[in-house]
Image (cartoon, rainbow, N blue to C red; front, side):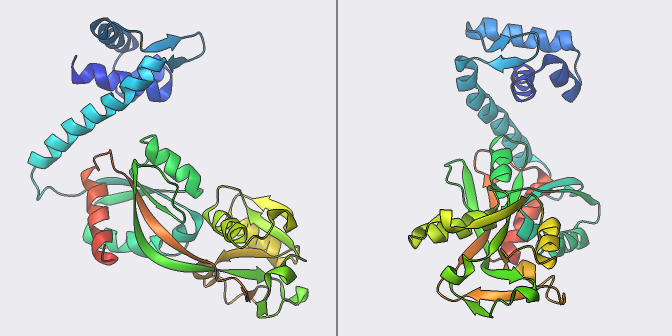
Length: 296
């Protein structure tokens, strides 16, 4: 068993295709097939179920996958540990962020990182917190910035910012500056999708206070904040968003902010990492900057 066989196995497992795996790691398809066949022969077990459309892990393959990832991570950790610590930080930083941090704290963080490491470029994906955690678990993202913790022993969270939720509406709806939750239930809601951290936080708070989610009059669900804001600006309904996010729109005369008087909805923003994954030098440098920035 060698590293090339294990890397081929991981690529095929993730992409469910020998040809796609070959393209990803710059090998020919016959070479990939040979690596997998040799590995199966050495382990004396079938790792994949092969069909005409895609390749799927067998139960044994699923079990071996975690060990394979650990083997590659251990190798990478050894290489990184003995590498030149003064090596220039460059390349691309892949960062997945939920809506609130992506539109509030992330731009300033990336500006500070760029000032320190001018040769770095960025690939920033805005996704729901649930999708970000899944991508980190699936090794598709190194670092995520999310608005909720989803319990998983493989994920490590660092609390970086405290925030609270407020209600926004069009002034024509006449919401007072302080409104009770029962009064709020009279209005139609514009919500983000179900895996949005803001929505999860709000619904969890209702449940904690024995308030029925069925009382919510959900008019519309949207998958991005700009659409949500435009619907609220039109007077279609109310919504619940981050106070930090609202500060970006506080100048807008078509938006009004209200506080829920009988609920104090606090939440945190977290930096999320896969505890089983070794960060690339660029991602590690970003993490170290965040540790300093937020006194982690």
